[in-house]
Image: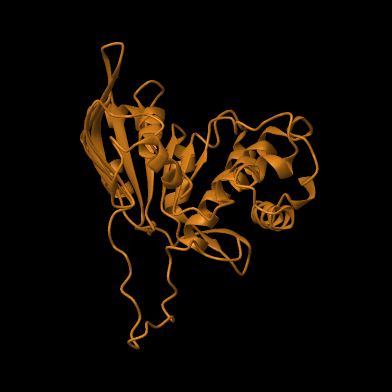
Length: 286
C-alpha cells in the first residue's frame, strides 16, 4: 500500500507547536480475564494479554484450544461471558452492534481458507467493503489495484476465485483485509492447507505488512515453521523480499501466546518459548 495506516504519524511531521507528536503507545488490544463458553462448555477461561502498537503476536496451539474464538472476540464477532476487551482504547465487550461496525472497519481479518465469494470477481471481493459503503467506482478500482499490487496479484483484477490457486486465493484475502489500511490485522491460520513453498509466500506478505507499515497483528497458527520464520527474518524493501536476521537475533516485536484447554499458558518471546519448562508447550514444540 502506498500510505501507512492513518494512526501512524511519520516522525518528520511536526505539530503546530513545532514538535513532533508523541506516538500512541497505548495497547491496540487488551483482554482482561476474558471467559466464554458454548453449551456450558468452557472455551476460553480467564484470558488476559495485550497487543502493542507495531507488535505481531503469534497465537500457537493445536486445534480445539480456542484460538479462532479468541480472534472473533477481538473484533466483536463474539461476546465474552465475562471479562473486559478493549479495542483501540474502547471497551467492546458490551458495545452495541451499531457502534461495533465502525470499529471493525479499523481492523482487517484474513479468515481460514480465504473465505472469498465465488460469484464475485477479485475486484469485487477485495473492494467488497468499499462497494457496501458506496465509494465511487473509480476510487474502488484504484484502491483494489493498490491492494493487489501489494500482494503481487494485480493481473487477477477481473478474474473469479475459481480460476485461482489456493495460495492466490489466500493472497487475495490478504488484499481484501488491507483495503481499508487497517490499524490492526487478524490472521486466522493464513497458511492452513497450503504447501510449504506457498505458505512461505504468505508469511512473507505478513512480514512485509509488519516491517513496512508496522501494522500490529494477531496471527493464529499451528505451523511452527511459519512462526519461526517471522521471528528470524525481516522484509527488505530494497530487495523486495525477506532476508534472515543475523544469527542469534530475533525480531523483538514478534512474540508468542499459547493456549491449553482455553487457558493462556504462555506469553513471551521466542527465546522464552524455546526455554520454557511448561510440559504442554515443550511437547507442542517437539
